[in-house]
Image (cartoon, rainbow, N blue to C red; front, side, top):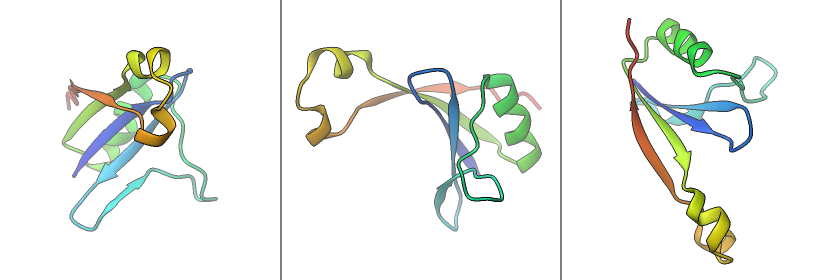
Length: 86
């Protein structure tokens, strides 16, 4: 199982988990996406879930600042290796 830790561009992170079954956001029991205020908190939860590999996915700033066609083309992200450190 692997995970994408996605920066929402403000202050929180959401986690998308990818497994053999499918892909989806980590959610509260009520259905709302879990939001993490820091990467250490996200790492702790992912370790407890058995995630072995993760990447930090950040939106490219150039997309937000310089292109007006972003909504139609979709935002681009850059992935950074994220050490899980068991």
